[in-house]
Image (cartoon, rainbow, N blue to C red; front, side, top):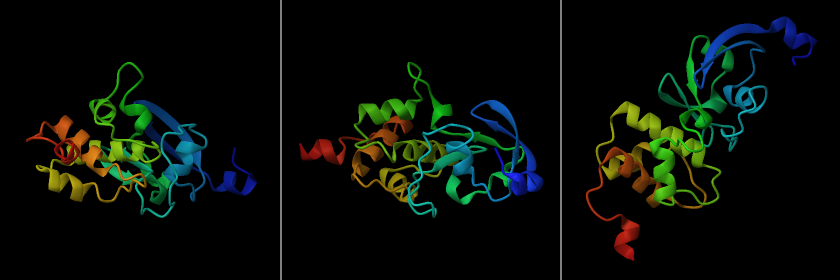
Length: 172
């Protein structure tokens, strides 16, 4: 609920969030990240650095990956927003979610939602055609646990780019 000053300044917007239309009245300073984690009660999108440098808050806006901590929610009137909760459900996982499980591409799991959303956006963009391009285009998403090799393996698996053993497999 907005306090009195914020209520007077509220801006009405309509968004599609994970396939469901939402009509909202928002204070102009609310970021998409704070909207998602607060009033929308979607905890999958993580607040990491809150400065657009770690990628933990990555979501898809109209199919493109965006750091939600840097996006003011009121600028998204008419947008289609997909969070990790909108990509798949238990028992019906998105191919990337399953690949992250198959390839052990998560460790603590904190960065995983942003990594998966970023990978989905990367695939939508169509610019990655090799492991090196995947790694470069995913470089805005940090993993403090260092699961980068497994993350690249998972993305390659979904993209069908597997040309041989992963670096991890080759080391074993």
